[in-house]
Amino acid sequence: MRAAKSYRVVLAAALLCVVPYGGAAQMPVSRAYVGAYYFDGWAGSWTSKHFKSLLHGPFSNREPLTGWRDDTPAVVNEELLQAHRFGVDFFAFDWYYNAASSPYPTLNTALNEYGALPDHHGVKYAIAYINDDRWAIPPSTWRSVVNTWVTRYFANPDYVRVNGEPLLIVYDVQAMLHTWGGAAGVNRALAILRATARAHGLTGVYVLGGAMISGYWPHVRGTFLQGDAYDALTTYGYTYVFGQAELKGRRVKAGVHPFMQLRRSSVSVWALAARRSPISYVPVAMGGWDPRPWQEAIGGGGPVIWFPRTPAQFGSLVAAAIAWTQRAPRLNVTVDGKPLLLICSWNELGEGSYIVPTRGDGNAYGLALRRALSP
Image (cartoon, rainbow, N blue to C red):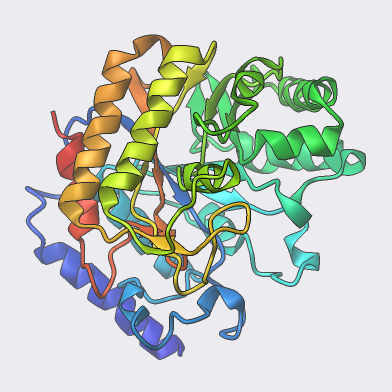
């Protein structure tokens, strides 16, 4: 397998070299500061559920040009080169608590490989703390974990900073409320986080809270106003809107749906944030959604749905997200003078939300991103 992987890395590099990027790896001026969520689960046993239904059959063409696995420095290095050429400024690595003692001990592998590389090719990084279900950090170990974050990650000069503060993305604000027993507990946790950063010479931590807001959610006002001390809100993606519709009694048909519906769900959340959020909001442009390999149902036990996509549709969605930041400047989070934009995602291959170069699509989605970012 190692020899085959080396061949794929060489092939990926060769294919990237022949694509007309307009010169070397230098990215032209971009209209946004772009982070791409990075699912850090492509390591470990081939029998892992993460590889389920992907290695063979109709979804095997989702294989990245660098191969399925990202557990070597060569693969992560090549991904950084790819991402930089497409205009991605940083990877937001999904981070899992106590992964080594879980059924998936190789989670966080690509993040570790990134940290060991001497050159990140202009692509920085941040942590997206996945705090749902078994991955939530218990309050009893919070101080220890955040100390590790600060000393091992946040202090790195290639770690993304907003207003001089390292960026932390919390996957689910509702899960934080559950773990910490309400808003007062959450604010204690965030205060510990920020105090730990200051104790190590940083100015604080800029925390983005993942909020599943929509017109279907009965507590949308509470989500915005309950007093949690986040600096801004965002999300991982917008398929939850369909799950909330199902919970509210609006039946969602199983099977294929037009991409325009996924776009509309995104635009509706951005509009809601513009009207009602008292703090900043970072929009997300989804690279699709087709979870048939993993048979992931939408929230609330609903059906499995998916949205066929094209590079042009994805590029148009990125352009729409940038246009929204221009219409709602008071909600912008800015980095290097540009509005922050998140992409879901670089490599959610099982969920069908990805822009990484693959055998099936080549560089099409990365190039669509680059075109959308160009002035």
